Image (cartoon, rainbow, N blue to C red; front, side, top):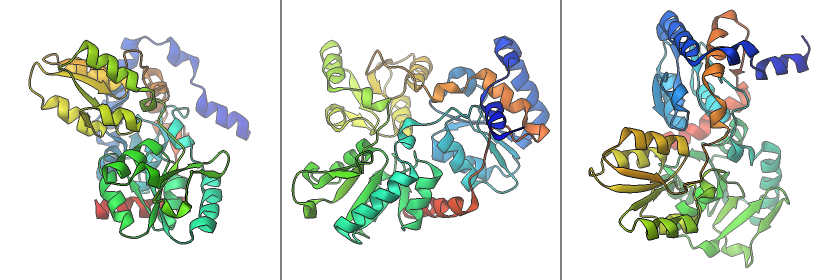
Length: 367
């Protein structure tokens, strides 16, 4: 088989899986799980469809699921229901005896793809010319393994939406400036909450390979990579205004990947886990407008009928790349686990994995 044919075979699901009924697909998942037992572990991200999440052995955010995969040493097969960078992180943290698979290789992350390694290396070279050795890079865990490795090699660290403030403080204790990849909104919201003025933040545009900033470069403390989450950026000030008008007593809670002006107007902002906990511990009868991915919002509505919950943006769609993983792809992936075909195997090269693990370890040690 040539390289192109091999690539296509890993991307194109056989038609027979499309022809199977939901009942047949669900029965097949149950059968494989029973047969493989503890040899199989299925982590499922919060944003996955209900048809997939029902079979998850654990649910959570990307880092938590990668850590659980590593801790589950009996599991030979990790079938990660999430997106590509999440499966990469799981492969970095798990042992050589464990194999990580992604049911659909098209399940990527537009935010992670907004910072590739070539762009980052070019940016770093130019920023060193401008600022010298005064910058420490930080990358959101929602980034490729190559970007994590770049950051780790520069003594920087990864961050999550839960520990971003802690890690930004840590970074400022080491260098005068930080480069925050790849989500400008999480970087801006975190720095602003720590007292950094918006006027002290610049944007690095990877397309033009230029710093976007009006003023004296010596005033810059935070350099924000020009990337964003295509889901969270779609929550707007107008959404907040309309929600306030229609539901004056409703609390608005949003993810920090939202725009700064939306976060400022919201009642609360926090990670996916923070949002879930806030809803779970809220008083019955309370009202919430939630600014995060629609699959999760619908699940919160379903699981908490004692509360009035809506999406902050009623026209919001689920994350399209997360939604690529469906029951047919999950069954296809499970069916190929034992035939050694390497179907949709996620394998990070040793040199990249080593430095990426450094960035993750710096975070875990300091947060």
